[in-house]
Length: 158
Image 1 (cartoon, rainbow, N blue to C red):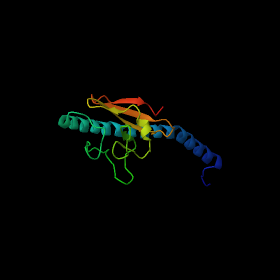
Image 2 (cartoon, helix red, strand yellow; image 1 turned 30 degrees about the vertical axis):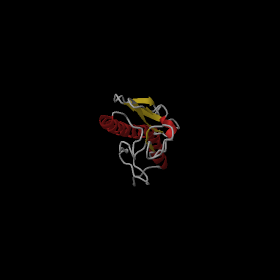
Image 3 (cartoon, rainbow, N blue to C red; image 1 turned 90 degrees about the vertical axis):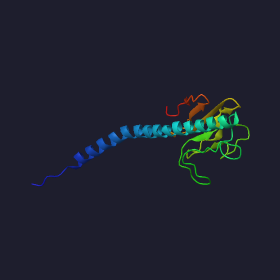
Image 4 (tube, rainbow, N blue to C red; image 1 turned 60 degrees about the vertical axis):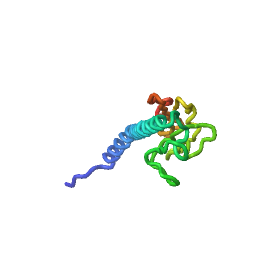
């Protein structure tokens, strides 16, 4: 007598696997989005440090992140003229803002308009980061100020 699985038994096993996958996949995407948020803390803290160093030398903060009279700051993973390895758009949405100078666009291609609420004066700044990390059309927006106050302005994971 040969022992084997019947077609019904195999279909039940496949149905159980599909059911478990349906439950697990959305949680997996949330963990991936939360991992992208770790990038924000690192890059905004780095931008804050660059602003503080610039302030110590010049007595004011700068809206130019990279370029002449700027901080010399770029997000970790920035590749000039190529696909960068970071996900969020970082910087300032100031009048006349230019890509690669005042802000840097990440892989998720958040527009500079998502950085509304950012500003720079001689004595203060609020830099921002934005991305649609969950892929739901809702921006995940973070800011950091001269006081190193890192805040999530809008939760894009909900």
